[in-house]
Length: 125
Image (cartoon, rainbow, N blue to C red; front, side, top):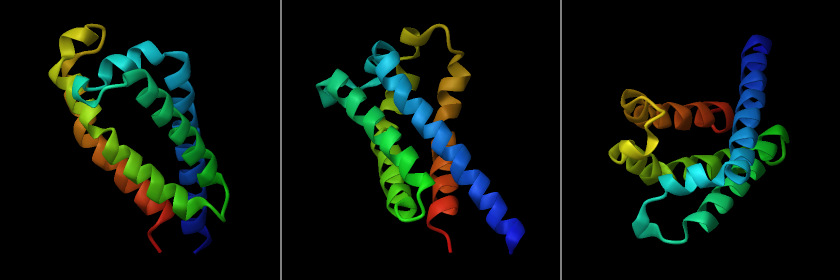
């Protein structure tokens, strides 16, 4: 049982670092993220900042026992909400010439792996 807890504890710490770092990047490298937002959504900069803020809040939420489950639910919802941006990035790969096209397409199934990881870490009993 202790070993299982240790893996889960390490997992939410790694996820917290991942989400907090990604969220901060939304503010530091916002121009890159703006290019990813589908045009039909509108307000790309505001959406980039909003998603970055929620990634940061969710990451910190993972670190607190009291907020971990809610943070997990919110981060899964966020990962689903930003999926159209990942599709848009893969479809418009010419805007991201510095990233191999295969990696842009590989991001799509990896999004589901990330969702499963958040679920296992925060919601699975």
